[in-house]
Amino acid sequence: MDERTAIEPELFGDAATLLERATCYVLGAAAGITTATLANATPCAGWNLRTLVAHVNDSLGVVADTLASRVPDDGEDSADPVATLRNRARVLLETCLAHPDDVHVDGLPLDGRIAAATGALEIAVHGWDIARACGQDSPIPDGLATALVRLAPVVVTEATRPCLFGPPVAWSRQAAPGERLVAYLGRNPVARPGGGLTPRG
Image (cartoon, rainbow, N blue to C red):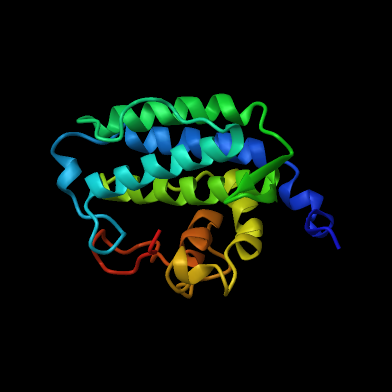
């Protein structure tokens, strides 16, 4: 069976919009970053905010490259990681408008909707990480989080979780969708940054 025939359209059909919303969310979270906060602890164990932003910049570049075969020429060693984040987010937002149905990862074909949804999931949760590191109470918007909660078990499976995220944290099913999402991805929704409940990527 072609792998694309197994995709549930209601889950992945609007993946580009989810990616766009996740990118806008991470941009909003990044607005709270200052020179001083770059040294702050994050929900990612062993990472300060500067390290996390560098990782997000890499992720933005990889998703844009996957969907459009290009990344912004902003220099990997930029002295201003927040400027790099904004530039890469801008390019990704442009890419969201017209990503292809089929892309290639390591030479293998992949449905573009899966690539976009996977990018949305990672970018949104790292937006939450950034907000927490900046001391902001800025949950992932309910509509975006609700869609990503449905997608998360399809994208983050027992096979893929070890190289992406930590074990899920038990959390109430009656909690807000953003809390349920970050808990599924290995975060304690109410833990202070540096508490050690973290993903690996």
